[in-house]
Length: 146
Image 1 (tube, one colour):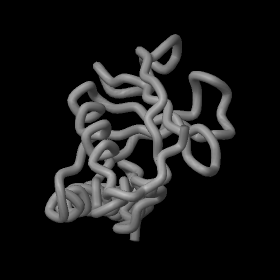
Image 2 (tube, rainbow, N blue to C red):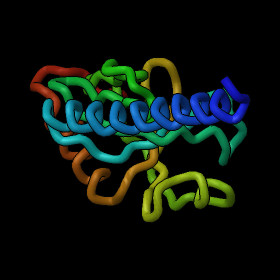
Image 3 (cartoon, rainbow, N blue to C red):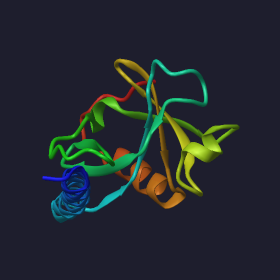
Image 4 (cartoon, one colour):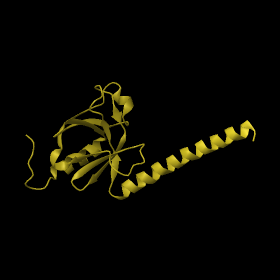
């Protein structure tokens, strides 16, 4: 078999794999959306320098949990999850410096406290209103962090 045919076969296989990956991402996103509304939610790695380390993803409310899925992963399981009773909204701010390029356009940076420390999330203003409403709808008798 001539070398050009081998190269062509390898390129065809690589293009096929990229297409399968793309189809997998679309199917995964539709599957996640079917089990409740999803919204664009980015999370900053706690080990990253300030303004860096943002990872794009999708958020989904599942009962008393906020689940976060990486946008370019094929995994059906959330990468992170926060319990409603353990998550507390602290503040919001506009993206600064390199964050403005790293995040979706129009997103706000939201600071929340958890038992593990402070987590930074980025979401649209309408998604932030949804988060605040979801947090305020805690079941009666749950303790709040003061």
